[in-house]
Amino acid sequence: GGYHFPRHWTLFNTRSLESLFEASGLEVVGTSYQTGHSFWLYSFHHWLRYERNMPTLARWFDPMRSKLILIGVTAFDKLRALLGFKTSAVLVLGRKRC
Image 1: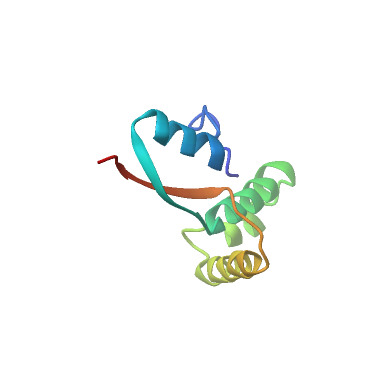
Image 2: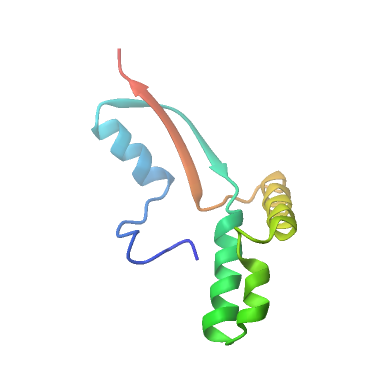
């Protein structure tokens, strides 16, 4: 779900994002990993809808309709973070060098 072709033509990781910031003259001041709850839901939704041909069940995993499942998957990602796992949703903060 997180690849979303054709929107994402380039896939970045922490190192490539930090290198891009530095090459642009920015100083990296922090890196964190955000929950990937919508990626989990869209992955399940698309798998059920398009691979398993189960559109009724797939609707349960639509992030715009399934608030309880969205909360559950967010809690799952938060638990994973507490255990040291990282998500694909990287947030890099930078500032202009003085």
